[in-house]
Length: 331
Image (cartoon, rainbow, N blue to C red; front, top):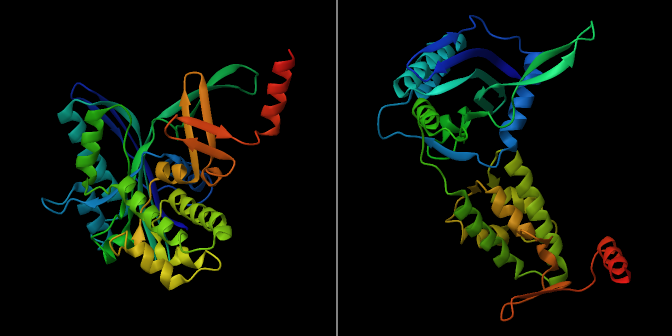
């Protein structure tokens, strides 16, 4: 999806009520390094499992972000002006809360046909070492797309057409509650979805339909469901029950949709939780001296569990493990 706007600012708050701003007065170029940086920030954002999904809080006054986007979409404000006002507001919130923070605010807007997204990424810088042309060791800096990254994505098309669904994706900052509070106030993020509960009820529907299939088709059916759902989650997109049905071979689409809908309260789309999806595909557990992991479809086949004795039995261990065990027994 092509970028239509991009800009970067810098903010340094000492935590003592003093904040310095470095504002860019014109937009970044939309190609080259800007495009590459956006791709890395977006990749870092989507890779984090702690993303939350929800909508704006419409019970009180609109948030600064909501007002800014309204002005941007109605063309009352230019992108640069809107981004500057947001940063000024954020500065005031950090000063009021005496929050210690420094980082770059990077704002991007991308648009293509019926897709229209707005992103705010906030990230610090990482220091590394490099050799310059004189072969001297000097510091080098790069934008951190890892632990310091947080931000929000707004699906503007979804917000404009369906203001009652999860058009916001929030990645909260780590380990800094005052910063999180300031960012939530800036963005107006609220009405968060319980993705874990939604995923569990969705998977109950998936399993209800699995019981209607011949046994020899169930494993392939589950694998296709998991693969499609994981791809959608990694794209930060909801799963459409009907579209999912179209990606599974040899099933009755209408019957599938009816069965799953009985468990998802007739919701045509579901935002899923990555942790719950992984548990559906694979059982895993770890203690200090023991780690066990196996695909869920192996249960009651190669792997059996006796709840009365709390015993797990494995028939046919992996070749590499068998080799290690045999060598250890000989030794």
